[in-house]
Figure: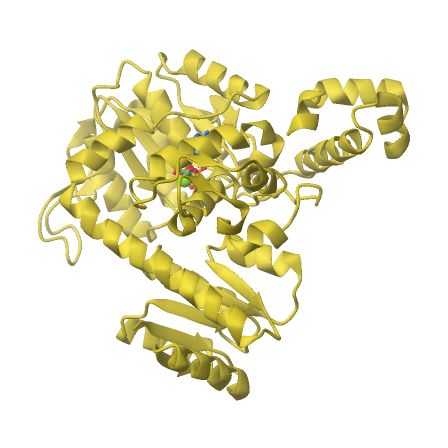
Length: 463
Ligand SMILES: Nc1ncnc2c1ncn2[C@@H]1O[C@H](COP(=O)(O)OP(=O)(O)OP(=O)(O)O)[C@@H](O)[C@H]1O
Ligand SMILES: [Mg+2]
């Protein structure tokens, strides 16, 4: 029996869903709005949440966001009235586990609930397992730290990593969510002469300003209410190693100023302290925001931007390196099979085909989650199409244009879309260039230039 929370402003829907759940033998908690739902969520130990999307005041996406802030692993399913792909994709991007479109038959609801609960059970078992076996896991994780991918786009990434790792230069990693920014930051550290030193990560968007300040720089005892003892900041902890500042676009002006000073002078004071602390750290930052735009809007200091932007590198979205999907799928099966207690060793061609046709708005992280979910359901040694979550089969296809994420400048967005359109036409024309140019309504010479610019060739026809 599981505790399931149902949030919907329409009584008939709420009660209807609750009835199905109760008949399945579960406990159903109902709420007529987002705020009430969140109160119940905090009070009860909820295993699964089903929430309507469109509600007055606190709506489904806000419910999702709040719940995921408290518990990043929480499973939430969204009920959408309008079966638009955009809404569903948006919800999945925010971390919804699944979605269901109104009106739906009770059978569909039942199967979705069962699916969610088996994943939640599996995760809980894993938590126990992990606690028992921490050392072993660290070992396994280290083995799977490798960056996977052989596409030209990834070759460029490796080349940059190899070039910058031995230096102490500040690296600025840009990429959509789930493209592997943290992985690359770690790889840079691992390949540097600091590898024996610490790799310290700070998520700059997760903390309020004052907390972030003491997290980064530490504080002295009594420097503010609640500062019961001295705290050593992350910069100090990262001495002789690398500090990874994630989501750097979100820091406040006063922290920007302090950061600028650390980068210029490699020294700082703890909050409430007088003593200057010198550190030797390599800085790597990551963001999916358009910092240049924040600079032009006066939200981000230009001098700090130039200090951080010494070596910029951009990670490609998965949709631009589809050829890597088989390798990645294989990698994640090996990485996750033991954790999910699955005996799967391979993926069936049809399942792989389905994955290669999916648009992956959440990039590699989304692929990893999809494989994890599928392993829970797969039987035997082969992962088949039926084991894949339903949204992979019905979600945005590869020929759907994917709107680039983050606040990127217009020229970059246009390039991304142009790239996608050319790939689509190239595929449709089976690689015949005159036909591709005709479909796009451009001259063949212009097409040659663009194919070259985006590195599109016949290899893409196989992906
Ligand atoms: N090229 C890759 N090879 C193998 N695993 C990868 C690759 N890229 C990403 N991953 C895996 O995908 C997951 C997400 O990667 P990571 O956390 O580095 O992404 P991110 O860009 O920092 O995402 P976010 O913007 O959401 O923080 C991780 O589990 C990581 O190990
Ligand atoms: Mg990250």
